[in-house]
Amino acid sequence: MTSIVQPGGDIPENYSPVPADADYDRRVVMIPMRDGVKLQTIIFVPKGVTNAPILMDRTPYDATARSTRSTSKSMLHALPFENEEFVRNGYIIVWQDTRGKFGSEGDYSFIQPMAGALNASGTDHSTDAYDTIAWLTEKTNLPESNGRVGMIGSSYEGYTTAMALINPHPALRAAAPESPIMDGWIGDDWFHNGAFRQLMLGFIARQTGAKGFANMPPHGGSDDYEAFREAGSAGDWARARGFDQLPAWRRIAENPAYGPMWSGQAADKLLAANPSDVPTLWVQPIWDQEDSYGAIRTFEALRAAGRTGNNHLVLGPWFHSQVNRAAGGRKTGPLEWDGDTVAYYWRDIVLPFFNEHLKDGPAAGTSVATVYNTGEDRWESFDTWPLACETGCPAPLTPIYLAADARLSFEAGPKGSDSYVSDPAKPVPFLPRPFSMQNSVYSPAWPTWLLSDQRHVDGRPDVMTYVSEVLTAPVRLSGAPIAELIARTTGTDGDFVIKLIDVFPSENATKPELGGYQLPLSLDIMRGRYRDSLSDPSPIPAGAVQTYKFRLPTVNHVFKPGHRIMVQVQSSLFPLYDRNPQRFVPNIFDAKKGEYKAATVTLERGISGSRVWLPLVPHDALVAGAEPMPVRR
Image 1 (tube, one colour):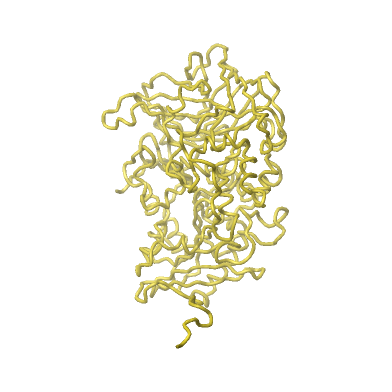
Image 2 (cartoon, rainbow, N blue to C red; image 1 turned 90 degrees about the vertical axis):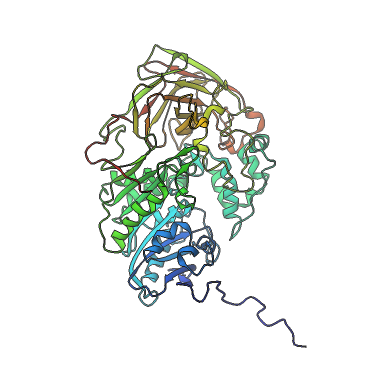
């Protein structure tokens, strides 16, 4: 009998499930970088194509899985949804595992900084993109191409796309960073204004615990609110699950303030200091629950640096990475749109932009800003953005004041104050309980939590709610609101959460679920110890009036007649953000359970009191250079 066990075993050196009669070739190549490390690169070439542009996505999320929707013989159906329009238009599609992940060689660094003081390796996402593009555009390597490359990607993939813009390869002709992670401390994944987003801990473990995906750590129950509260600090929760083994976590835990580690790798600042001429679409979902900072702030920074001709902004009515979901964009949370906003994005914004720069036209006519009006349900095009801001915009910001009797008013009322007790033992939930992200970074409620009905906390004694009179005329906001709280606390630290909300009319016969709905438009948090300095935290003087001023996410919204404007103020948003002990400790990650104390917070009212600065513009603010855009269905 012949042995069935053969040298080399049953796993061949190369195997492809692609049918022989497929309309494309799938090539897996290990592309060498300048330091000799090779990166696994998967190239999809339409059969018979010549002089084709290249679209590349560099991912730490497994290029094999990300590039495979099916094993269909049709390239259109084999590749993921976000590649569809490019496949229809004859593009070569490239997916690559970033350094140290999945099929690529080398060492993985979490959100790898630019080579320099924080990265002595001499390589980074910029150099790896450069070397990859150099290989792809060498005619002998990919003779079917026209030597022009575009890059696109969302979230972490948005970051790798953005970093390719630093000292870019000449063949990089267009880029679209979608929801890129640009500053993980001020407003993207890990912190917001110093408050730690502890529900991202599972992602850190999943991404850095193995070359592939590591197992998610156990949360300790089916209700994250209870699990994280019982654990104590975010540091206690992490240490109990072995996070001290993870270098990425140790760096975060040892650097809770905005020191050189954070500011030195802030990609928005790096790009502003090293601006490129590559035409770029900065894509920002309006309700981005993970990375609401990166795209919009980098767009602003680059235009402030003088790069006004090649940087464009898209603000869509989506949650994080919704544009990559085949379900499309006819609906976001409870809101239904007049047409498929995701299909419009790919077909009428992105594809023409890339075709112009990678195929010699036709000219796309891309606006400076293409922005969805979430109140009037339409796309709008602007030759300047924002329409209102603190300085340098067509209009200044307008204050709306916290007033007596839980009112909100454009007129400052008499001096007064309102108080509430913030108790870390009873933090304000960010979603109705129970809620768990145990089994997935994307639990069902997570993508649309920023659109969740805020009536679930309205009425709590530790949530201060202020509301305008019923509007008799439309009110338009087009820009980023700025919260300015004038407050005192009996504690020596504390967090401040501000929510700007559209309150729908109480009766809606067509959609009863929207009757009285409290729709968040823009909300964020600030850790009080950073009120004077992001890098040098200081205790809050107990009982002394202090100013807490911070920017909220950008909006383009019209409050319709019959609606009301609402502002909610609270001191926790749990368990998304870790609890503040409300007593100053050197590092909140090391706070002990006994150090968490209740505090009374008092909000000052009046002409010198608390307010939210609104980007208020005339309702007919479709000024010169701006126009509504039709959405094909």
